[in-house]
Length: 194
Image 1 (cartoon, one colour):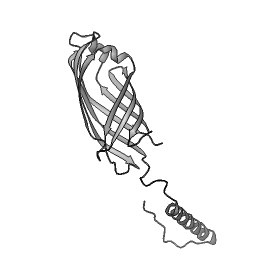
Image 2 (image 1 turned 90 degrees about the horizontal axis):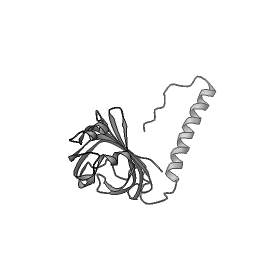
Image 3 (image 1 turned 90 degrees about the vertical axis):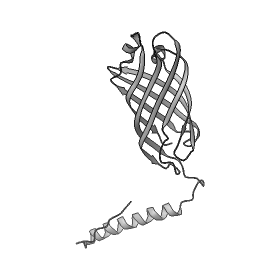
Image 4 (image 1 turned 30 degrees about the vertical axis):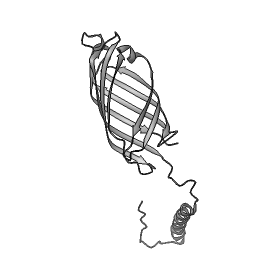
């Protein structure tokens, strides 16, 4: 951070004392920061905020009848801001492929999940939590809420919000072809400081 001090000469003794007090306070703050002992060799990991885009497909489309479905999703994280990341500057993009029994009934309940996130440095974080679908008008929102239980940012609270404008999942689930894709989504990923 740059600090600028005005070169104008104070016109009174009070102004000189005020400037002297500010300079003295800055010196004490800097000296205190330099003299403070480090609690550990590695920096304390702080917080992360990332934005990005997301999409997903179901093949065949999911309906209210459980069936075997192939699922594929991408999340492209962009514009990450990391404070106190110990060298971490961004979250790696995700490409998820899975298959199993799925139905639109899954959209009506909170689901538990454990997964691993990979950072740009190759470090990983294990997430444990839940995700919940929320349908409001023609916007489907999926909210992930939990904690990193291992790896970088261990113990930090994590929230990821996926929002798909123009998706009415409940109506699509009632159609013969079912809900086939979640497209043009945005993602907000947040790791809160301890």
